[in-house]
Length: 228
Ligand SMILES: [Fe+2]
Image (cartoon, rainbow, N blue to C red):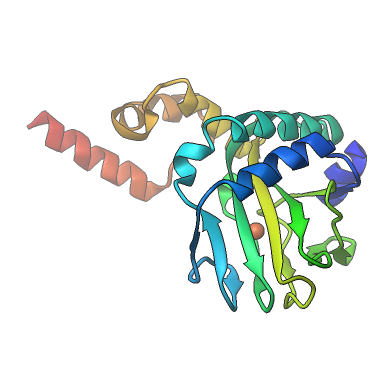
């Protein structure tokens, strides 16, 4: 399995998520309010629901524990060390489509996992180096794929009035992006002052992906402003 994922960038793991975990998520979805988010890309069509107050919910149990459990499964079957970036859920309705797309950088390793279908599984298609593959995921299965490399889509949902899917996203700790993240994660609050302050150390190490010229120019301007 590890070789398959390394070579082709996807892995369909069948009946891998324990029933208790599915039940935990099912109960969670049944006790958490939703809001309709029709502009949620890459989905098109009728209503698409997301859970409210997600930024707070994903940091605590039960989601935090399930996130750790899913990460352990993925690390075992891909051989990767992962940094969890974020996860989220959607409740999709009949008639929707998921347009063909690749994911953003925080989704270097992506996982889609069905929690429930009202009728029949809504397949996901991935355009892999082995050609276009359609995956019908049963509840208990997950599909792992390199989200930034492998375009994926779902054709019109003619299968279920309601489907509940959860998505988990990670960065490979040992990829170029992972090295970049680890450098900044050593500094609490890196998104502000520390990020600017460490540009020079990045330049010195020369073994990390460097910010582009625009960033260098902005940094120098910011430093000049601070010196005044
Ligand atoms: Fe995606």
